[in-house]
Length: 40
Image (cartoon, rainbow, N blue to C red):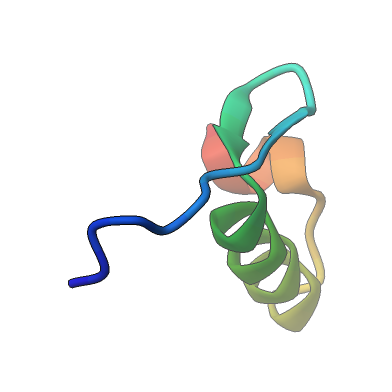
């Protein structure tokens, strides 16, 4: 695991790392639901 990786966070109502947010948005889109619904 890279020890010096820069973590960039994005405010979406839920604080999360930017790359994880991209994965969650893609997963929500695949299942035809919103990000909020996916997180619930």
